[in-house]
Length: 186
Image (cartoon, rainbow, N blue to C red; front, side):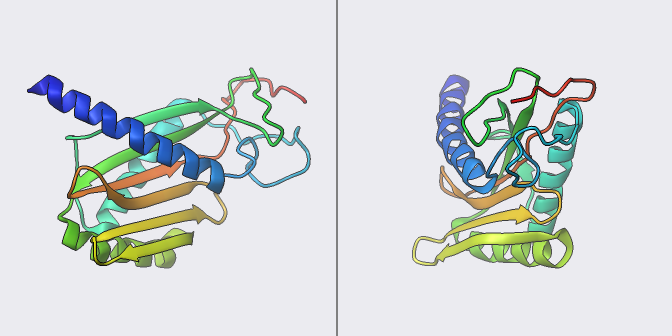
């Protein structure tokens, strides 16, 4: 029974990871830069992986709080550190990375649209997040919210996920260089 749940969780993780990574690439343009720039050697912000992960856990917890939902451990949380990819598809070997952190909450489908509306309002009022896209599908009780923090340059997603009655909350960081690492030049 546990193996069946693990396989389902892995399958869910793979599907949602692909969506999250695709969305992160689209939202976090020029992933190796904190601000769009034509200078590929612009200094990157520095943060350790541990600090990034701790921040992501706190932020998704805040998202859940604003949405009024409790994050569960049935699926996830999922932590995905990836190498940064530059504007010309370059990948440095200096340790720079992005992080996508995803948690899930069990929320009945018919409650997901109001829950994400509540989160959207809180993000606009208190979070400094610009909602880049928002879609409600009332017939199927599905919702998709994509956003980006204006000054800190991270992206987030809150949306209906599978299996039924599952809401995903995810954040993706900009590209960070670990403290003490020497930034590679291109």
